[in-house]
Image 1 (spheres, rainbow, N blue to C red):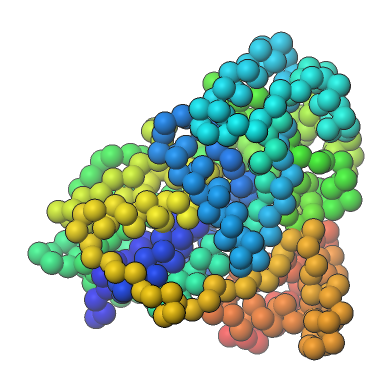
Image 2: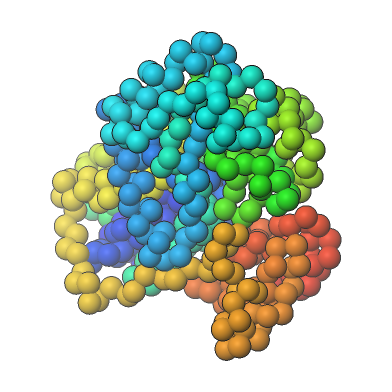
Length: 458
């Protein structure tokens, strides 16, 4: 049985970021994931926004880490090729009460260190977003809010972690944890694992793992968010991330462009008991269409090409639940909500520093010993993709042979995904790496060939 210095449990965006960070040291690190792929639960189904943190609770750990993470991830995305579009966001006030709340929201943004917001009147709101429904009274412009690829981010982290020597253990669901005098044994569905330290980044299962270690610090309530995805022809209707003014009931429904060239409407917010229920519902669709009708009625005339639901790890706490227990050699990273994508690299730094402060010796490896960061395949519609790059096609004709015509995915991209350091385990994983079968026809024309290529690679 292998012995690791640190085992990170949870292959979502936070766990992958922590594994990458710790793998830059001389520690032996393993990343353990219950499912057959990384980023396969909460991280694959969110609103994919790179947040400035303007609306976080000032002084909270979330505010601190989102602000830091925004800069870190923005720089990392540029370095490794994660697509980001700096669209900006517009909070729209539809009532006098919401209009009166805008100065306080701007003050809150400044309390979080974001000073570029600007209150705009009704006429400017209309200029910024001409297709909004009638009745907008004003808004708050947040130029720094951006859209990002939620799939490439954890994949980039995990790919770099593996290149640095991290061991990736998929299909290893932790069923029990036994703490010994010097090491901890993780009983998993893939076999036992021994480690000196455990980092719990298990997301929806974080509280279950925490209780295995005798704690009762938080309870995860899976909060389902349903979203509608509109065809690429709708993209010209939306220039910014269009947000409602937050209320005591939550942040509400947004209309946003996506990095893939579509437009998204959602999410709903429904607390569930089943931590696996990502089904979509008739009531959810009706609710979203009603919201869309008032926010941007023109959008409702466009075709919906997909609908999906994601589960967020909501808890009873208003902040992240991050605690360390040196006696148990255990670090908890719990209650990481939708801002976890933005905060991921800062959370990884924070985890590293907490471990170091609690006796974990982790000398950093010299830069010369670290492999160069990976260069990730571009999935963003606003940037050149292989089918539109003659020099790439000339060097390798496979990039000129289109397999998925709706999304313009080529044979070369599918081949590269199947040959990558973390190949997809199923069709959903191949979608997240290439965009294949995600277009208007939803795989009607290309699905059989894509699935055959996946089977042939196994």
